[in-house]
Length: 496
Image 1 (cartoon, one colour):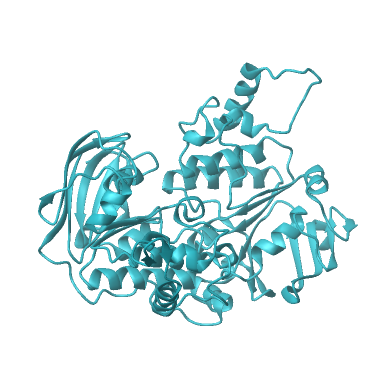
Image 2: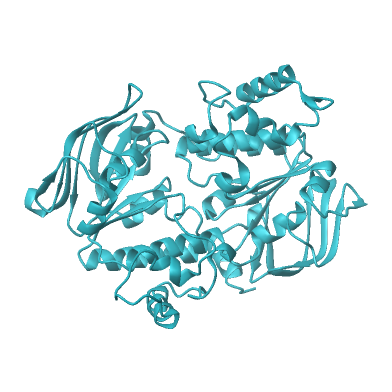
């Protein structure tokens, strides 16, 4: 019903350099509903949301908000109307603390100076809704990716909002944080706030959302009542194909030969960690945020300092003090934040793909461009990277293809062990399956794989064996035939 609509988009068209990315899209968002927007990478979801927030202007079409018609928005106008958007790329100032980031740009009095105690007290009220260990005085630069996401959400909650747009909000979060976010979204809905929820995690869409709109190749395909559809139908609308089995079967089995041994390892955020990885094995490291998963992985890769303990690789003691040491041994790592740690988005695909192999590709002081070209062509074909040119910026690719470039960069080093930290964060269901196949293929070729993921289904679907962490300690080790969500949750919570 039109009178119940908070927002209506009518015939929105947007083109870049003659290429149309939104084709006559119309959409209604009702008051107090959670409305999912789904589609493969490149479907037009982010472009449509930026149109609502005023980050971009449509070529044609109308935006109707609370009955008033606009030909386009701008960030100041949308903010004044009560529209807030949280992008995948964080909009935070690392050098400021949490409270300063939450209230950045907002002044409630005319005094020249900020009262930090008052500011932190107000921030603490908002943060209490999350029930997590984030302090207003903590500096953003010291926070994990998950906690930075929560600060972004807290920024939005500090304002009087009528429409909240969440773009992949749970990508860096684990189960506990996701539950907290869902609770807050439901509270906002009960208060009459509308939410547009963009996610590749379809299980979240079915749990949280009232209606679902599917975009494909810039076209609106359909809007469905959540309780009148299912996952299979939704995927068919999204990619116009049936994905079949989501987690491809393994062809091989883990080998007997031990590749990596970690003995009594201790460092920042973890202590007394011991485990081993066999050739051809996918070992999952799971736990809640703060459990030490990423910290352990970074220590093995040499990115963070090890305080005590031993690392053995291929039966020999390994002194890993830097990523260079790890790469020299045959250990590489695909980090959780590909845009700030895994790739240089503003550089070309060729540069990103060959960056870790410049020594191999050089003739003295000069780069051998013919060798570089051959390497890029090899991995473009092997990884099915969709690109127009090797010279285009990585930032121009879809999330799935960006991730393939990062993986290719490390595979070009011919590793024996590769660590994947949140390998499918922010990529669509089709690209996820491709990444799953790549991980399986690497293990089937005899490579050791350490997998970290906040998606429990992903961990269960891919891992041969799982190490469960809680507050920096190992609370359990599970074989594939012992996997169960309840058991993993119990161990992640510290129950043995």
